[in-house]
View 1 (spheres, rainbow, N blue to C red):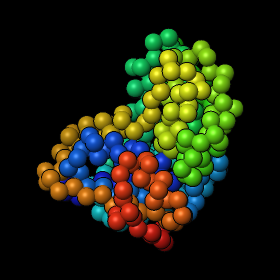
View 2 (cartoon, rainbow, N blue to C red):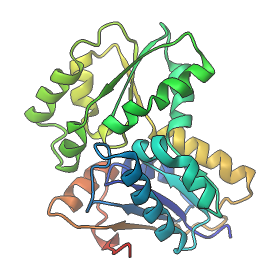
View 3 (cartoon, helix red, strand yellow):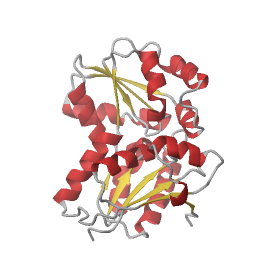
View 4 (tube, rainbow, N blue to C red):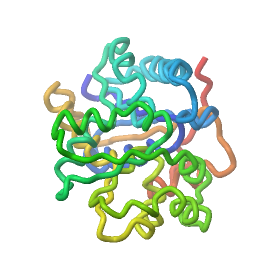
Length: 264
C-alpha cells in the first residue's frame, strides 16, 4: 500500500504547481497527475457540470490503484470536495483548507484578498474557511477568469498578463496579503506582484497542500519507504503548447512522462 502512487488532478495544467511542491516535500512518493486539458477552464461552468467532470477524474484515478487523492484545483475543491470524499475509498484532500490556515498565519493587518475563478469566488469558500479560524479578518474576493487561459497559453510574463493584472488588481491597496486562489495563477506571480506592490505578501495553495499531504500520509502510515520515485503526467488533450507550459510550471522537462488519455 505504501508504494502505491498518489493521484493528483486538476482542470488543466495548473495543478502541476502542487505536484512540484509535493515532489519537493515528499521526494520518495510516486505520483500520477491527471489534467483535464480537453475541457479547461472549469471556473466559468455551472456547479453540476463541474461536479460531473470532477467525479470522472476521480474515478479514472481510482482505477489506477492510488493510495491517496489530492484535488489540486481550487474550483473543484470549492464546489464538490465533499462529494469526492464520499465516493473515494482512499483519503482525499483539497487545496482550500490548507491555504486558509496559511493566509490567517500570514496577515498582519487582518486585510487580505483572494483571487480565483468565478466559480471559486462565487462559492465564498475562502471567506468561510478563513472566518472559521479568525472572523475578524477582512476578505476581499475577486474573480480573475482570464488568468487561467493566460497561464495555459504560457503567457505569464507577457504584456497581456500585465494589462489583465492591472485591470483586475490595481486598486488592492489596503491589504497586506494576497492569495492566489487558483493553482494556475503562480505562473503570473511576478506580474501580479509588480501590479499590487512588492510589500504585499503573495501566497498560493501549493506549499500548504504539500505540507498537509505529508501530515496525512504520516498519520495514516502511508509514507513510501522506497527511494525510486516516479511521476506520470496524464492529460485529456495535448495542445501544441502543453509541453512547453508544463515545463514552466514544474521547472523541468517532462516530455517523456506525458501521455494522452481518454476518461471513458
